[in-house]
Length: 300
Length: 200
Ligand SMILES: Nc1ncnc2c1ncn2[C@@H]1O[C@H](COP(=O)(O)OP(=O)(O)O)[C@@H](O)[C@H]1O
Ligand code: SF4
Ligand SMILES: [Mg+2]
Image 1 (cartoon, each protein chain N blue to C red):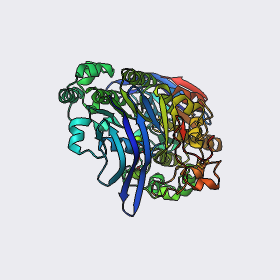
Image 2 (image 1 turned 120 degrees about the vertical axis):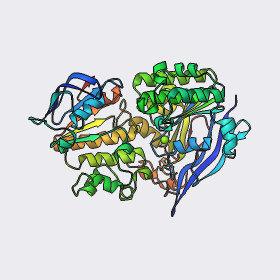
Image 3 (image 1 turned 135 degrees about the horizontal axis):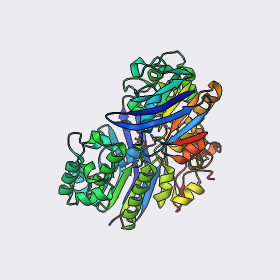
Image 4 (image 1 turned 60 degrees about the horizontal axis):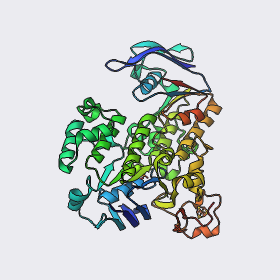
């Protein structure tokens, strides 16, 4: 098994008269046997990054940088290469809002069995691991509750036994019990040597399962380090604010709103919301390269 | 007072049977329970969006006689759902969405939920879930509801946006004396948000 090496990846979308800078200069390594959580508020670029890794970006997107998985650069690979060698085999994707990714006219079973046949996996085993009962499998997507659709998506992502799993907001709308079960499943995969990239806005879930947490703000990683350290001793003012907003902590929001990705400030993108900002913050801070890295001129 | 008494409701068959629940003005009641236990069904009955098989709903002393399009008291109740994308017309700008219930307080409401002018001009696909949910909250408050029903309102939201929206709702309650029914599967959140929590 190999590392995923994301190196200085940026993604821009061309709109009429504007450019959306959705992902900015992101570098991140995910190793086999490691779960990395990518957290940040909605719209900060998490899903765009995942889509870039799987070649699912729309036509108006432009990428730079590289994302190496073994000898494949995911950003340079052709769609044919991604479809035949990568998706489902090397990388399993649990998409955001899974219900909308299932084919409406076919039962969960027929979709799972087809995937198992193509990828050489075991449909029954994947279904069982995802907590699906045989009677759930005979339903059509519109007959599945949100939690059930999520489990079908999980089974589909895992049926080919890919070494890297990317899960985009997989806990949304699930009950605590189901969340716990899913996170345990991720942990089991990681302990078996899989790599998991867990994309989530749920800090509690990230805390529960991740070895490392990367905090994204306005398309950039502003802090990355061991999960407990990032949540309990955050060094970036935004990461600290996000952790303190949890209901089990202060339950107070970070003041203000994120900047528009079409109009990012030249310096630190968090400056307009940051109590500590000074003149030096007009220069963009770079991410340090220590094990608990931060991109801030005046870290906490 | 918003109350449901002896409510049995569902779709083909009943999902909830003989359930009673009361929300007093100015108070916040949390509603917890596993998925499929009927939290949303009860929410829809209390929001007058779904007619129960049996039981009565009372709003400020008046028994409700019509549901859905027959519900005269609908405007006394504001509702928020989990998925803001499913509850806003994709062709509307956020400004139009907030103005939808009628009334001319868009700017005031937008300020309340901290939406800037630039965001108000955008359509749903051009904003994040958090920003769209802010617009939905502004829309829900447009007609000064006596009660607000929040069905998994924060599920799609990060911790900071969750805390911000709960803060907006609390401020509104303090000013208006409105009662709130907060539905969530997050017990920690309800523990922090609600005055009391009921389990289905
Ligand atoms: N096809 C697109 N064209 C223009 N902007 C887009 C497109 N897809 C996503 N975006 C924008 O990219 C930003 C990041 O979105 P996303 O990755 O979905 O955030 P997250 O997953 O962190 O919630 C958002 O501002 C979003 O509106
Ligand atoms: S660089 Fe400056 S503005 Fe940015 S987070 Fe650090 S202190 Fe705040
Ligand atoms: Mg996303």
